[in-house]
Length: 457
Image (cartoon, rainbow, N blue to C red; front, side, top):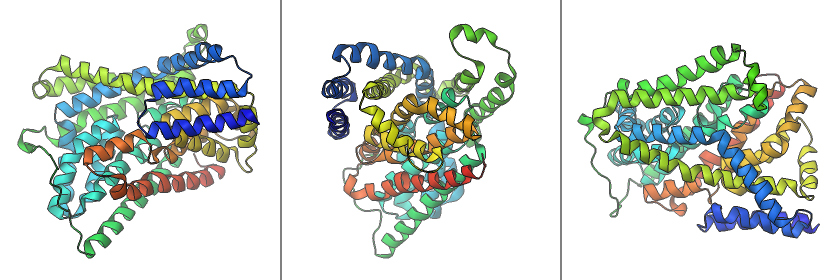
C-alpha cells in the first residue's frame, strides 16, 4: 500500500510542480526517486542510472531525428514567410466572415505538413489577431482556434501526420504513419467539426451580447508585409512533399524492402519503416524549403542552427518524462496499477485509451504520456491484438488519439505557451481551449473505439 501511495504522491507532485513552472528535467528524476524510496523494492541509485537514464537514452535515440528535423523545418518555414503565407492565403480565400475556420485550417495545414505546433502558434497568431479584429470577433477565442488546428486532429488523428504523437506507436505495433486511415478520418472529422461548431456558436453568442474584439493596450503585433510573402502554392510545396514522400516510402518502398540485416541490430523493417519514412520526408522538405526560399530566409546557417538548438529542450523534456515512467513501471506497486488497467471491461482498446489519456494528463504531455503507457503495456496490447484478431493499426490510432485528450489540461506547457503568445489568461480563454482539445477529442476517441470494435480501420 505504501508503494501505491508513493506513486500517487509522486504523480501529484509532478503535475502540480510542473504547473508551477519547475522544469521536468529536475522534477522527473527526483520524483521517480521519491516513488522508488517509498516503494522500497528498487535501489535508489540503480533506479536512476540503470532505469531512468537507460529509458531516457532509448527514447532520445529513437525519436531525436524527428524532433530535430521537425524543429529545423518549422524554423525555415517561419523565417521564409511560408508559414505566414499559408495562413494569409487560407484566410484571404475564406474571407473575414470565416475567421475561426480560417485560423483552424491554417494551423491544421501547417501541423499536418510537419511544422512544430509552437512555430505554428507564433506564425499564425499575428494573422489571426488581424482577422479577428477586422471581423470584431472576441480575441479570447483565438487561443482555442489555434489549439484546435494545432493540438488535435492533425496531431493525432489524420493518417500520415509526421507529428511525433503519430510516430511513437509505430515500433510497438509495427505500423506506419498511415495506420487505420478510416478511424483517423472519423476521429479528425469529429474533432474538426465539433470544435469549429463550438467556437462559432460561442463567438456568435458573445457577439450577440455586444462583445467585440476588445481593447488590448498591451498587444504588440508587428505589421506583416504581405506583398513580400511567398505565393500560397510555393509555400505549400514543402508540405505536399512531406505528405507525398512519406506515403510513398512507407506504403511502397520500405514495405517491400528485404532488410534481413536489421536482425543484427535487434529490429526489423516493420518496426523502423515508419520512422525512416518520416525522417527522409522531413530531410527532403528542409532541402526544398532552403532551395525555394533561400533569399527570403537570409542567413540559412543561423536559421538551421536555431531550429536545431530549439529541438533540444523538447526532446530532453519528453525523454525525462519517459525515464520517470519507466522507473514507476519497475516498482512492485505498479503491478497492481497495471492489473487494474488491463481489467477494464470490454475491448482492450478501452484500457489502452484510458491508460494513455490518464498518463498524458498527469504528465501534461501527449507524447510523454503515450510513451510511458506503451513502454509499460505496449507488448501486452500487441499480444492481445494478435490473440483477439484485432488489427494492430487500430491500437496505433486509438493510442495516438487518446494521448491528445487529457494532455492539454491547464498545466500543459503548450497551453501555457499559447496563452502567453496571445497575451491572454486561463480565465479568459481556457474554457474554450479545454472544450476543443480535451472534451471533444475524448468524444472522438470513444467514437473511434466503437468503429474499431466493428472492424473498421
